[in-house]
Every structure is written in structure tokens, then in C-alpha cells.
Image 1 (cartoon, one colour):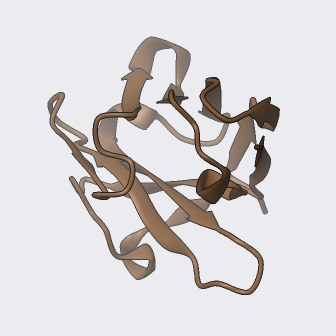
Image 2: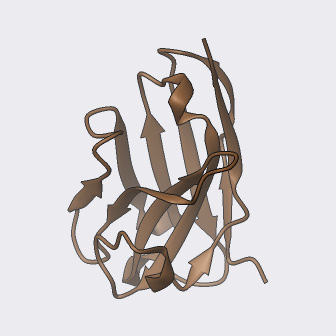
Length: 124
């Protein structure tokens, strides 16, 4: 069972922007911390960004800090990852995840639910 659905991936030139969305129809986002991860071919899944379930605090990987922004609209049960100034090294499959009553979690194992991923490709 897939609890989360990502959308918004695609092909973009270096320096461009994309906004990824993550929605759930099975549970309320309002009591879940949301995280974004990515996995490039031949590499392990890595942490990108995480939010708090109870306030607007966020945490980012150093590689995306200042370029990516995580946000959420609980009323829409949707979280977003705004990605600006994209680089070819940002190319990966991006996954969103949710963890009940957890905040700013970087460890994938602590998340309860995952999406199937959306491909982001950044060309030179």
C-alpha cells in the first residue's frame, strides 16, 4: 500500500526550478513530520530536507541548503519541496516520507510511510 504520492518531477536545465508535491489520502499530515530524500543511480538514498510536525521548523542537507525549501499546507494534506538553482548533481529519484509525531528526522528508518518517488533530471 502506497500512502504518499509525489508529483512535479521532470527534466530541467541547470539553474532552473521545480516544485515537488507530496500528498496523502490515507492519513492527516497535521500530525506527521514530512521528509524528502533522493536516490541517484548507484548511490544510497540520502536525506534532503525534513520538517516538524508541530511547527514550521525545517532542516536541510548541506548540499541543498539555500536552494531548496520544504513547506506544507495541512488543510490540503500536501507538502512541497521547492527546488531552485538546480544542478546536474541534483539528478535523482525524489521520495517523500512521513513520520507520526516526529520532527526534523534525517534517518529514513524512522519514517512510517513513503511514496514511490518522482524523477528529477537536471541537464547541463
